[in-house]
Image 1: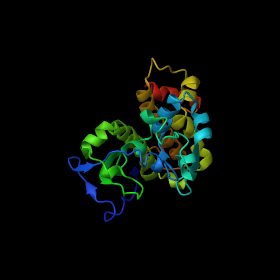
Image 2 (image 1 turned 135 degrees about the vertical axis):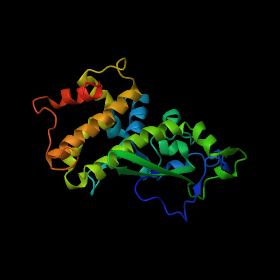
Image 3 (image 1 turned 120 degrees about the vertical axis):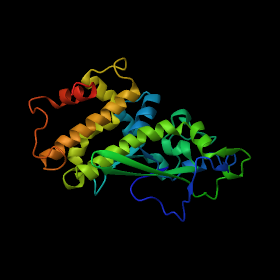
Image 4 (image 1 turned 90 degrees about the vertical axis):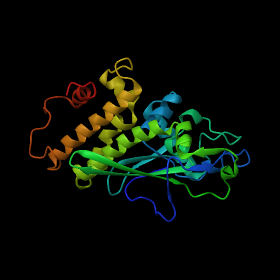
Length: 270
């Protein structure tokens, strides 16, 4: 579980340190109860990894398993699992286990540890502050009665959370850059934000469009370059509205097709 913006109420979510110990072990008696009627937000890396695991194109995965909307104040696309919000998660098996457990979303893999994240920009450099906390116990959850003891660090390592945190933070930095540096709330509309969808959520479609193979850029590097391209595109769009570091200056060659311009950024020619 991650939060952006204001951190959760410190009285309800007391900060914990990486070396603190806690007991937790999932129990068969409550298995899967935490996967019902719950909001599970997905960031672009979550979507990509799960869609690839299911061998589904990005748009089809979003259509089948997700809802997404453009924030009323930010116009930024927010994605979440649609079945879990209204009942059992679509990936929940009859025995309560997860059918996509190896590629489960970041927020699922770290429970019962939550993470609050704040990103602030001092000029062009993001400052990331994080706070780890124990998520409020749900009445049906018997995990805390388990005998196995972990440190917070051990739990996050075992769940392979740190790589997810790193890649999620890159995305959070992009969102905050658009908000704080480019003042996107003043000019970004849902129609304009849709231009970002291939860069954020449809890597397979984008690869085919740009002719970039996995041999040229592996999945993780392609993800990093896509976010770089999204930042470049947003900066140039902001300039056309009079915002951001390029406002009033020279932006990309207007004669270069958008797809070629994005390809140049992704493969490092820009």
